[in-house]
Image: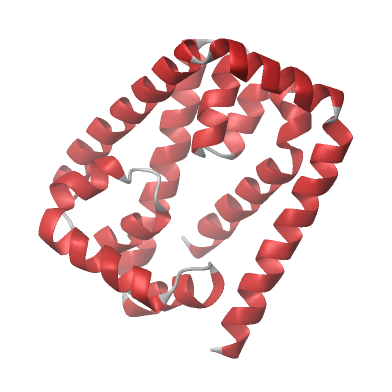
Length: 194
């Protein structure tokens, strides 16, 4: 599971680095690499068919949630510590997520269906597979429907943005790579100090 998690993190970082190029040349591949909200909207505006969109986004969100849940089950407190040390979470925000989860997991899981930390907490709390499947299904369906609707409502501005990105693609790629490197090195530097 740890290797799968590292693979998913690498895939997300690759997506962040290459999104400006792939959004036109390989939007389905971009969605397979990362199901972040921005890619959910932009890949639809780039013309990914709705069936492909639903299948890829569902698979990617489910895979990330399942891997993080299983890591939470297996490593419990250690997994939570990794999020505060290496992945940019503060202990205060982690505590807040745990308190909210304990009180309202029926709302938290569907609302934060794409959140790795919520998935880890669900594992630490030993949430049953049946409850997870139900809440994850509701959350994924709602999220995909919301972004499909947003992409339709804001289609013209999204298409204009994609045209701008294509015009300045190499600048955007360069800035994206620099941001990925800066954020990851900052997280690791901060984690090494703890």
